[in-house]
Image 1 (cartoon, rainbow, N blue to C red):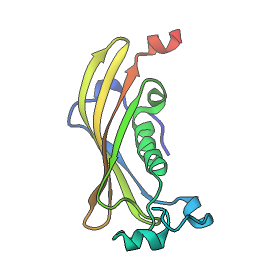
Image 2: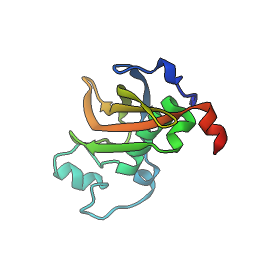
Image 3: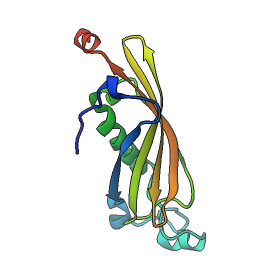
Length: 148
């Protein structure tokens, strides 16, 4: 995993964020028993029309956050925002997922550059979006980083 932030001078609206591809895995789905009416229970979710137990939102948010850390580096840990919506049947254990993003705005902000992006997660062939959202972070200048 690379955590080197892109240089603020290189960021432009329309810029693609380097994608992150993984096999989705949540240990709890292998190790725990869930109640009969839980979205994390294979039998229940199949009766509801899903392919299998849904992975927890916090795990999927973690994958999206990893995409942001890879792009923003340490800047993601201070003053960042993320908002996600889960759509199209969710993610099941073992799905191949790809997290993607595109810069939508880059504006001067106090002691740095506020970068906003649309982000999403895809799965399957053909790919379909299962998570959509937005994220932003401030890439602070070296001078402001030395003050804190």
